[in-house]
Image (cartoon, rainbow, N blue to C red):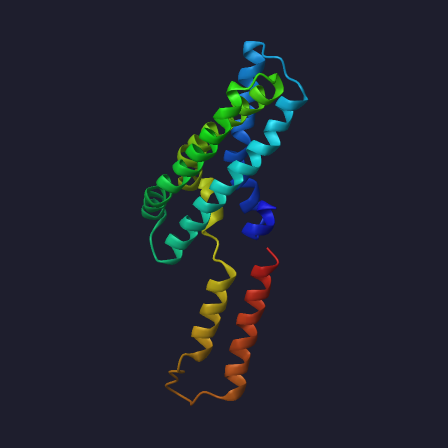
Length: 193
């Protein structure tokens, strides 16, 4: 789903790194501490992943908007962390507090599920605010700088609508049509990526 939303396999795979890390950390710690893993605990990974993806997509959408506004990678990342910190923190806090009530349940599976989800959500928040910006600023983060389809279409319209500045000869309809065809081919090749 992340691949579909971000419109790219590479984008989706890189975006999933901070989403998979909380489950890896949680179950790694569970294995190290000897915690008993049952079906309820295993289900927390899918629920935690769903919650983590929401914050990641929010962060990446904000980052890509900052880049479209002309900020470089460093400034866009800093502005995105500044803009997204509070909403992401509030989402995690509200969901965690809501689940904390189940931590006092006498029904053991409900208690384990609630505690596991709270741990996963807090870890996901840390991953989204620390690991995701680090990924964006690393060489692998260049995958997020690929121009979006709206940018390509806007550039296509700007170039084709711009007045022709020909010194030797006036612009011809055939030359204008050829330019539009070349840009359309480039746009189509970007869509297939």
